[in-house]
Amino acid sequence: MDSRTSRLPTRRLGKTDLEVTIVGFGGIPIQMVSEQEAIAAVRRAFDLGVNFFDTARGYSNSEERIGKALEGRDYLVATKSGNREPEGVYQDVLRSLENLRRDRIDLYQLHGVNDDDDLGKALAPGGALEGLRRARDEGKIAHIGITGHRRETLVNAVRQCDDFASVQVPFNLVETEILETLVPLCQEHNVGIIAMKPVGGGNFTNAPLAVKWCLNQPITVAIPGMANVQEVEQDIAVAGQAELTADEQAQLDSMRSELDQRTCRRCRYCEPCPNGVQIGMLLHGRSIIRRMGAARWLEWGALDVIASADNCTECGECLAKCPYNLPIPELIREALDYYRTIPELTKE
Image (cartoon, rainbow, N blue to C red; front, side, top):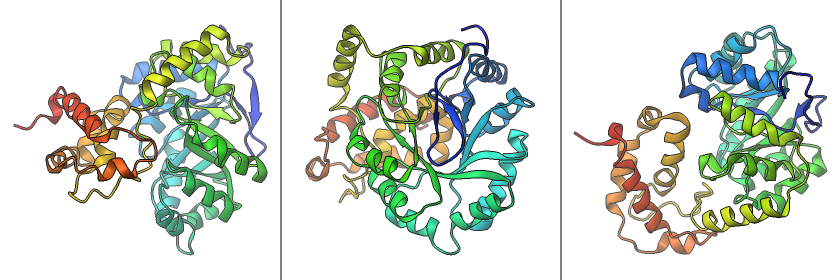
């Protein structure tokens, strides 16, 4: 695969007319590298045939870097905003257009809708959906999507709103629950499925194989985060390959057995903790640091999150509420050990 003559397989994104390559470019990691490295990674993905690039207003300079790397090229772009006010999200669309150096954005998503109250606010009159409809009516965006980590909320989103052309949701070798719920509903409503975190936020030892597994599932496109040219080439190489071999399946089974009981699904069923421990963020912080950097997590209150762990009495209430039977107190201790190795998180 040395040029765009190597065509990657494509799938139609739900009810849209967009034909997206089955592997897309996840734009979170390019925040963490130099601009030169970021632009090289984006352009290499494009040169290898990727036509779908995902980013967000919340990914610091990711929009700007993708816009600079691909200005004047023919590609599809998805971005998103966490703003829940109509004027606020509309203004975010304008900023995204400027950053991406585009006249129109192919897919603009409501970012991180993780509970039903948040969904209700976004869909209600005077909510963010109103602002995105305005942008769509004015031709600034082509289609509207939604992202989140809680499949039940995304199920409700698809049932309640015909505007959504796609859902973006964690899906990987360990997090497969959407196969029984969200996937068949999306197929019924002709809604595309964008699989984020196909390598578990960096937890899987063989990232390309994890991506290949994902591509053999009933999704539209997987968007592994790619920080450099090497990662781009490794992840894209599997897009043109056939079904999983017996040896690959054995490797996948080994990775699954290792991580299934160690992976937080971010569903937050364990919360609220009666003692105020911020369980979800304590367990998710490692992924944030790997993908976005310690400085970003500090902006989101990392020190308060870490300090809340002092209140854990190991009462067992979170264990009883976790549907995945995770050893939560043990995982919290492991997370704290990791945070102690990060200089930015060490108190003076």
